[in-house]
Length: 327
Image (tube, rainbow, N blue to C red; front, side, top):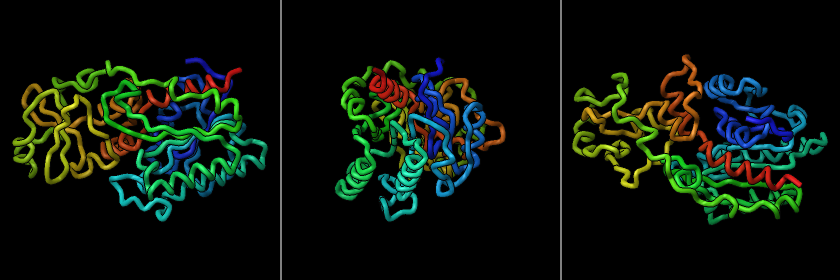
């Protein structure tokens, strides 16, 4: 993996999916910020060369960030999600976008204004409040001197990962020529060759804690509904949904917590089990050698996988950004 001349800092770094995608494209991630102490454990284990600041973004100042070219942020998506209450900027987490802009302004005052701003969020950000939320975000970036372009991409269409996951990607360029050179058309859809059976092993022997037997109160519902192999099911508290498209439904942050939204399969031994945390990370494009720290419980890792980005898509967008930055 080559080290590129461009340096990057990430806000809301999570477990480092954006960092990994940009690193695979050739960028050098040197600094990151994340508030969640459990995410920080995973991030540090997998990104030992990146200086991670574990703190609330409200406490981060522009002068804290070293000289960089690219600033990224997968800012909290819950306020804009179908799964949430969609309060948008009325939700404190929705205001995290303005913390990003505050930091950019402070970086500019320190002659360190990012050449590129890369943001990720749920696709509903585009349509929330009849488009007004996204309009404010785009106009705010433009007011700070950025030329902005955005697109909604699906993991199974653009990342060669068998998960149905639509997210909006926003790229801001300080340089107009770089903005004009960048094209989403250079990131076309690709055939899904990484089929679900390459990621999920229906013969895998797992610990009992991942299995659903007669002792579980939802067992009768699951047994009645989960009848086909090579299919991913999703338990939604009062019903079970099968995904007939050959991909995993969108992984969520609350999967594994009380069983809600957890992806399930019928194994070749006719046992019902949920996907393991490792499988969920693989369904986000993290590599086989991605470290899951021993001190984390399963619920921590499920949440981290559900909140993560799909690494392959990040890498493809990052490569096109780099292409636009080159003379």
